[in-house]
Length: 147
Image (cartoon, rainbow, N blue to C red; front, top):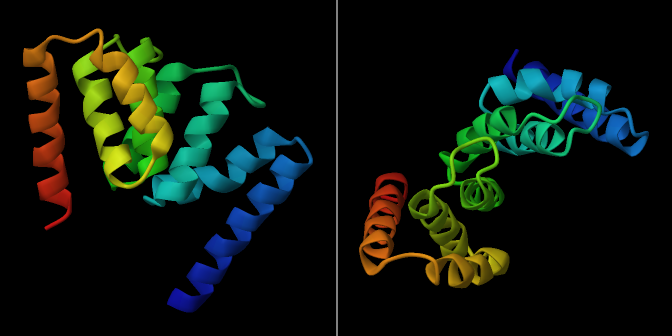
């Protein structure tokens, strides 16, 4: 049963990719949403991206943040970067440079060079206290998920 279930999930993922290649984002979302709801980080990012970009659905930054957060909390660097970007720009959430810095830091720790560049940019807008708070939050989250 487990092998059949995994095969079915893979087929749904591939069917979603094929739909995107056709420009049919509504079908991709239909294929990926059950996988995302089951906790698959990659499909959570893809679902977030569909809402973030308004591909086949009305753009919904709050919904994008919801899906990016689910994957980011699982340690996925792309989702951490995307969530940091949303916080830095106040898209779907109130602007919060401390949270943006934290998420960018976590993505950078996994080798995301774009996050490293964005950290330099937002750091210029932050106080030393805010930077310290963000670094502490990032360290706590890193330790919690990487022990």
